[in-house]
Image (cartoon, rainbow, N blue to C red):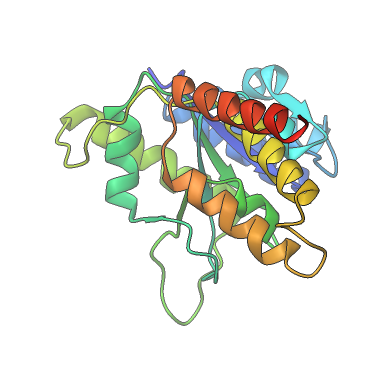
Length: 237
């Protein structure tokens, strides 16, 4: 049922959290686990804490690079406990659940960061949305596996009732297609000196946010690539 949803753990420090996350996933019907640069995996400790859910670990995809890992999906949702300055669209958990369940034709990456530092600002820039799980104001940091458990439980519970408020999304471009376009655009803007060493960080961030907000479809990304190609050819005449 949840075959279109990937749970991605980034730079996980403790292998036990990987095993516990696998257990949390399988009890709610999730099997797609992706690991990015884990500190210790495969691991006997992860296997022990998976408690009968080792098959999820055995099937887990492992990547060294964040961009490579998210290329499988086309909508990236990053979990974060901290407020960020970048104006990435924010989802409340109810809207997050509705979006995933109502748009099963899309492939979602639900992304959890390192236990201590969470997702980096650069990683969050690759996310279409960010979500923070509601917690006490006195202490906001959830254990990684607990955070995974909450998310998959809420998805499993809501899938039984099918009471949705969010709208359906169009047939969106993949993360790989979208990020390739953004990287091509940034490269061109460096060539034209619109992006300089001085403004590189701020403009690159704004460009990512603009196009992530746009919910681009595949044919729209192809059109934008065509525009860039046309402009590049014209400038060389």
